[in-house]
Image (tube, rainbow, N blue to C red; front, side, top):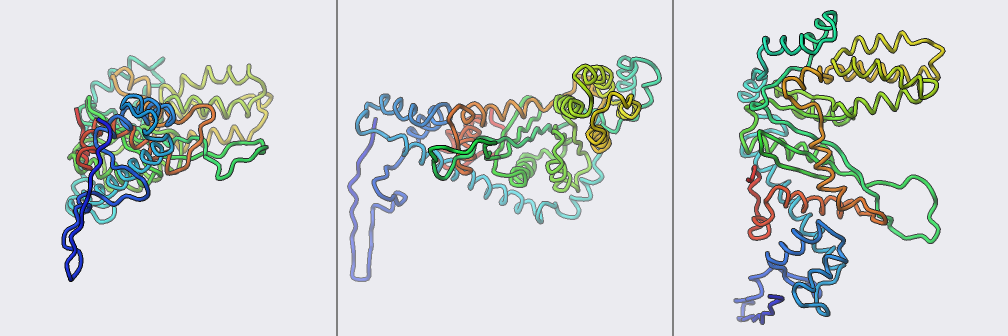
Length: 405
C-alpha cells in the first residue's frame, strides 16, 4: 500500500511536555521512514538476502508503484544491515538471559547439574551391532582389533544432537578505493556459521566469532532441553575450533568431535603434494593411505608413511607434519566404513551447505566486497528466514529460539 504519513502533536504544560504523540514511534533521524513488517518481509525476507541491493530496490519500488519516490538502494543496504545487527544483538542478549535463568556461571552449569552431566552416559549402539559391522568392513581379520579399539563411539542417531560448525570468509571491503590497487591476496572478512540438527529438525546460527556462536549454541541447547542427548560436532582440523569446543563443554561427558572425511582427504592430498616427488608418487601413496584412514586404522596409516622409500620423499618436514596431524586428530578420526554401514554421518556437509545458503550464495560474487558488520548482519537475516523465524521477528521483534516447522 506504499507509505503512510502521520501528523503528530505535542501538548505542553507549565512544567514541561504532557503529551507527545510522536513517542508512539521510535525516533528517526534525517528523512528516514518507518518500516512496516510488510516492507521488511518483502525488502529483506524476499529481497536483500537473495539479490543485490540495487536490483532489490528496483524490484521493490516497481512492486509498490514508487519508481521515482521509492526506497534508494543505499537506504535498503543500510536498513538491512541495521535490521540484521538488531537481531544479532537481541539473540546475544537472549542467550545470556537463558543461561542466567538456568543459573549458569559463565559457561558452567550449577554444581549439582554439572555432576549429572559429567556422569551422563553416551548413548551408543550395542556391542553386537558394532562387532558385526566391523567384521563386514574389515578387509582382513588383522584389522579388526584396531577398528574395534577406535576411540570414536557409534551413537544412536535419535539420541544425538549433531552440530556442524565452520568459519567462512568473504572479500573485505576497502576503506578507500584506489585507481591501481596492488596485486596480492585479498583480505577476507570471517564469520562463523553453525548448523544444529536433532532428528529431522534443524536450526542455524551465525556470528562474528567462534566464541559468540558457541555461546549462542549452548543457550539454544539449554533452552530446548537438548543436553539430555549426545552432542556430536562435525569439524575440520582447525585447532582453535577444537579447543574452543572442548573448553566450553569440558563439563559435558557425552561429547564427541568427528573429523570430516572430506577435509581429511584434502589434508592428505595437500601435504603429500609437497612432501613427495611428483604426482605419480603422491597418487600411489594416496591409493594405499586413504583406504586405511577410511577404516580408522590411523596406526597403519602412520606406519605406511614412516616406511616410505626415501627416494620418493622431497620434503621430510611436510611428511612429518602429516604424521603429526594424524597423531593429533586420532581421537576424532572414526572408522568411517563402519559408521557408513550403521547409517551414521561421516561429513560436515550440512555445515558446508549452510555456509552456502547463509553466506556464499549471496556474498561471493565477482565485484562484491563487504564490511565485517555488513557481512554478518546480512547472513543473520538469511538465517532468520532459513529458521522460519522472520515473520515473528518482523512483527514483534522477538524470537522463538527453537526448532520451527
